[in-house]
Image 1: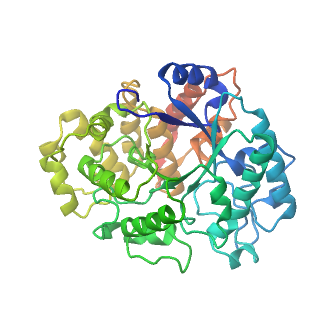
Image 2: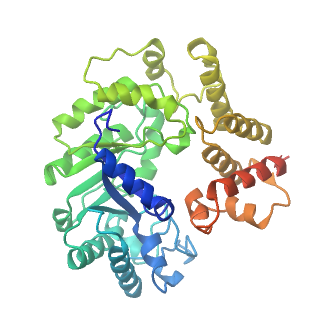
Length: 428
């Protein structure tokens, strides 16, 4: 990070902080890297209270989306007891974090399961979440006024609320470009392959652009004008869905830097993690380098294809442009996207298990298994109770956080993944 001129890291409180706080703080202090402690508010705050599932978001049939606090839990705006419990949990959490932490980021999960009770349905999703930002800020100002505060703009809450005054109390606001097409710069209208994603990004009646990249620029212009200097970008460079597959779009990110500079944004957070980092290292080095960049032939070709991600085209000649190791990785990823089955799952897992210093078997082993399971592409026979819990967890970290601190969560998950490879079968 220091070599690339980066000065701040976001640490996921809900995943790993309790296990690794000591070494995180030591290493960041030694490198003079500021820590932003990020918390999924509903998951953590409710878990610190005597929560009731009635506080949580419900579908149109009145059933809760999540029966217990987890990463994807959303609260119901029209539950007074739920709001009170959220505030109570926020206060307990704020008082629990060390004074060495100077900045906190409170957010919610993906925006697909906001409450749809009769009252909540009358409001767009960004308005359903607004009271909880307000409760968090009030709690922080009351109990830890020295903290720098921030929140995020994410799926289905990119629009400015009708009463946005609480954002003036925040020090920074993260804008997550999750659904952007990675082969085209922010603001481009050429990302037509991602046009269908507009149904996920914006609340009903708020999709005022045809494509995500165009939509994101429009929202960025609005937010940066309303809250100058506070907006920064969260770019999913190593998006979990890529499973470590490099996207060959360095030049696009370089173009985006010019756009963000013109908007006078407060900075950029590039999502990165050590496993698979070697596949993306040259990209980060280029972004940190102010010198002119010249895309290679592959990077020039990709925007002319109809791919959504690299490489979801069965006919694309991977071996023509990539070395054997990268081509093999991309081929496994392509099969996962286009023809997922039990055999490919086993082969992909075996591939990433060969060198865990360069790959991440947990990301592949969990992510591919969930994809097969949830999309009815494969079934698992006679799983252990632990493996059943693993495959039914909406997020890997929801499962891992339940593992006692005295046990090795990585090894436990690896053992489960080995079990999955033995008990996976295609659905006939």
